[in-house]
Length: 207
Image 1 (tube, rainbow, N blue to C red):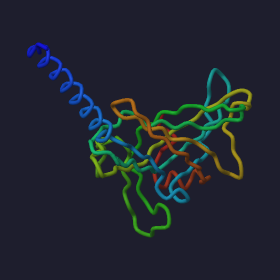
Image 2 (image 1 turned 180 degrees about the vertical axis):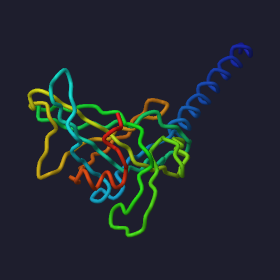
Image 3 (image 1 turned 30 degrees about the vertical axis):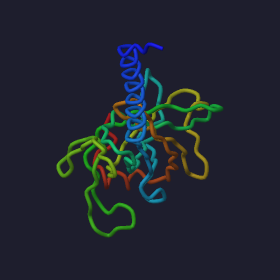
């Protein structure tokens, strides 16, 4: 039987390219970033509070602020940058949530939590006086920071936030540059407005 060397070489090259491609896909899936988002000290740093009433088209609005302190870890083998960190809050409507975008704030400072020492806290993704606001998460490392959100409602309170035992439940969703998402639940504890303004002055003026 006559063997066509050229065809055999071509087949070998095809098989080699397929095997090489499978290895590349395997390495990509193995080495890709793997983000994990977690609230830092869930019982200490996750707060909701009532803001002064607002006004919309002649109607009084109800305003709520949310401050959370979160950590984003990268358990993968490649570094990755974050593009967004949104908060979804449950409302009184059945199965309903609202999506909130973070607002820029000064770096919080003060006796936060149980510490007696004055400390400055970073704001996630925002450059401040003390912190650089980097959103790049290297392999095997984590970044952390506070994020501030505001929800405002007017008219019928059927779509207002759902409050149970002075707590509000939410979900944080972090997205990286590849569109991959990491999520986790957060339970916000109630704080008096005066406590919040001691940490972030004039927070009610931030829009």
